[in-house]
Image (cartoon, rainbow, N blue to C red; front, top):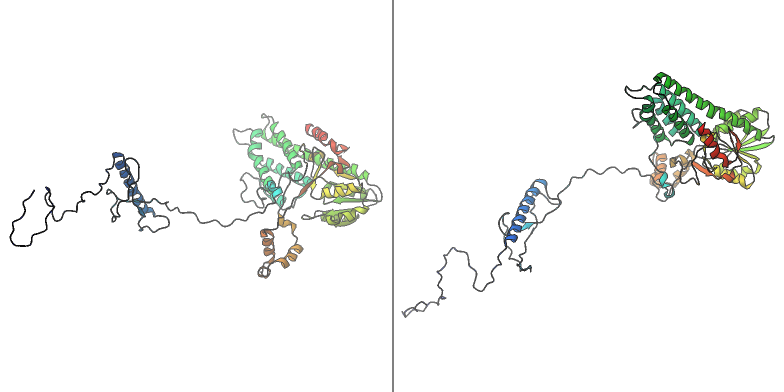
Length: 494
């Protein structure tokens, strides 16, 4: 204990607290008062964890400076968050008092919040045209038809390129016409073919030269049943070629076989069918036919040339209006022809005595797969007990089964349903701001496509039940629809 000061007559100074420690220097930082709670010491694991966090903060700051932080300029400072101290027992302690900003790397530096880095996105694509689909037929929507030679494989022959465009634009229409034109084009493909060295014609021609031609034709329009049967026949011929046969002889054999197929399975078959069918026409008959069929036209002309007096009613429908050409040709040859649309078929049916129909295909269950509207004609005839005769070559027979026209069909562009007159009539339905446009036709088509409450469906074929068909005439004779699979088996095995 220090001694008390002597009494000098002056006012005594305030007593200093008794301590054994020396007085601190004037520039020394203030020391903690006695009794204040000491900061808990950090364990080694916590120090290591803090050092690791500081290194991550350094890397984040360097990266933010070079790349830039999303949603903020590069020179902006990251939001800081003070770390929380924890006791050894895991309980949270009180926060430290706020301090001024410190440089990264020093102990106690607040860690910046990590943010997502900015990503440069490509410019948005232009809105693609969305094709509205009818839900029930959604499985039939595929790739749009090929209307140009752009994108065709380099192996596609020029004759096939031209033929595909004629298919997609309906210049060549009808199952028989499409099959014959395809085989004639294949003759040109085979004539220009040369087998590469080290390859066999039987293997290389089908896989590497014929397949691209078929793929392109299928992109322009789906392959018909008769085309599929002709392609299978040609592939069988190619596979059976003896490797010992020279290339010139093999190509000549294939070309002759194609000519024989057209002559026997199509030309001669049409001759036999038309000769048999004309015997069904009696004087005074009124024959109704739907759309257009080459073999039906041949039959009617033969009967007329044989001197049988009868009258013809041609029923037609959109969008192709194939019956116009048939009615024009029959009238040109001197037949008495009436032309009407399918909407008036019930009225035209009152005077009909016989119906002749063409076919796209005859299914294995005896059902007729033909131009859409055929089933309605057959149903009207069945109600009035009018015999329905189908003229069909055996090359159009298939072992497939069709119960309806939904599972399998071909869709055409919905815009084909609108004629020029109908487009002009729709101009009155356009809003005033669009009806005054210079290109009214384009505005009509845009409204036709974009109207949200309008769904458009343009299917090309339907299925006629076998009970609506009286007889099927083929080159093998007249037979009931139930005999189709037997004839198909005989024709494919010969």
